[in-house]
Image (cartoon, rainbow, N blue to C red; front, side):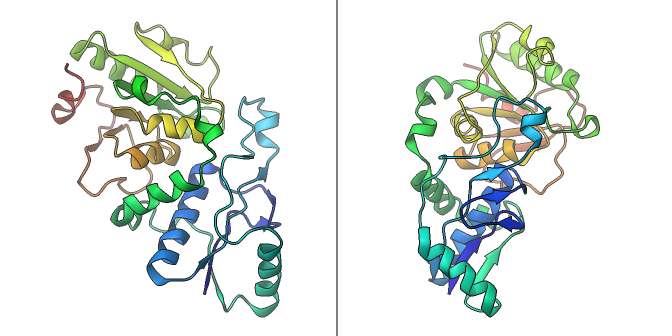
Length: 272
């Protein structure tokens, strides 16, 4: 049996047109990989390379084509194209296709080391070379999703400001790093807080990787945030979350709503 993460409806085997962003594609790849390892089969490398017009129209720094982020791992190249064509003709009886988000992190939580090992194996080292683990481990990450989110999906910037001010009251010297697809003007209110800096490590995966190295994440309502926390077992605070829990109780996680107070059980992470 073959296991294939089909990341977009229009999947040409090498390039896909449109479809989900990186974080949601990571669910499909991870679910397929775990099933393959548990059931004993052959894994077909997903088509990560993507073309979408949206990032160009919005003039985003990261065009979200995910080129060269990952190395091929599993069946790839001409054999992959042959098999996909064969499965299409035969109705896919010998191939399990993974093209949904499944239970998000529900099943993956039981296999977190296996999932983390998979992404550590396939990541192109050059794409995360600028991520400084030693610097980040004492930082708080703040992920602000703006660019492709309509206003109703965005977390109010006033909430981030309040939470960051609460962090500063607990530890005035705490370094805070903002990860965002917003513009500098949009983030000006956050950047005005002392000890806050903005980082972009060159691509979406590198930013997820960097978040996974921090000691705490203040998250957006985005699976992009969640993957950063999941890969590094990083405690996470949400304003709201449209998907199930990232962790199963083994790592601190809280949805605080409009409260701008750091929960008591997180405070020890911030106090030197």
